[in-house]
Length: 319
Image (cartoon, rainbow, N blue to C red; front, side):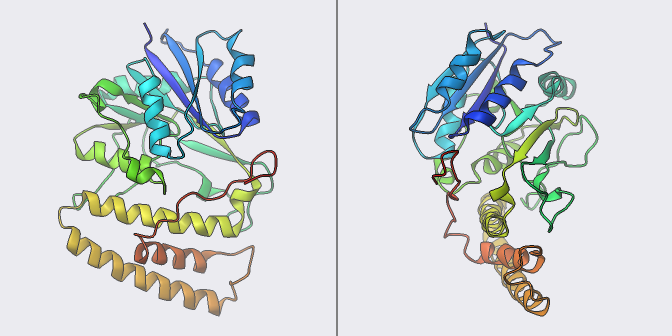
């Protein structure tokens, strides 16, 4: 019987997938859990299969490979939940590497707090140079700054999200989070992103408890193209769109909230534009503060026109 399933969703990143899986197989597992790893491959080439087959033979616990070609992140992660046989399901992204005590810390936080979900920090290392607009890399790190084992106050009473959480480095008690066997993620969010942030806010609104596991650390390798100014600005706009959709879904007064968000979006757009002009920021590869503020505003004003998938170069140079 499986106690815990590790789910890794992958899309044409065989080298980083290999590093992710090796870190999962190197877990100390001091709690003595019966563990399995499930890899959900979303790329038509099946580039993840050779990686899984090469590691599975000598692995200390089962490693399964599943193909899911639907281009929708909600469908992909729901498939991960469906394939998992453990009561506990941990997600780690295919560009993340886990510390050896990662699972022990996630499960320990869940048990110590009697929570339904546990999440941990994500650090960042850059495959190229750190971006000059963010030399400390703070934009690429998830650290809530909460004490270890703190319960996360995910939203304010108004429904406003205080934190943006993703499924990378998370652990779910499936029977408590989804007692009726319902799909975890809404497919309407899967085309444009934000599906995992929406899931956390929805579960929190249903009374689920989310624990912060400060010692359950993973490290993400940030590819050079993801630090490019153009990429970051698209991401900012998309994240602002997610924020509006999730906030409106959770607030008890959506009309008033919508009006406030649109007013704030207009102000951010104007102030960001003026600041960018005054500081000659347009065209700069080193500064993006004003343009980032603009994109925050435009994301709110254009929240129904979702950015959708952002083209990512493959190892073969394709997008």
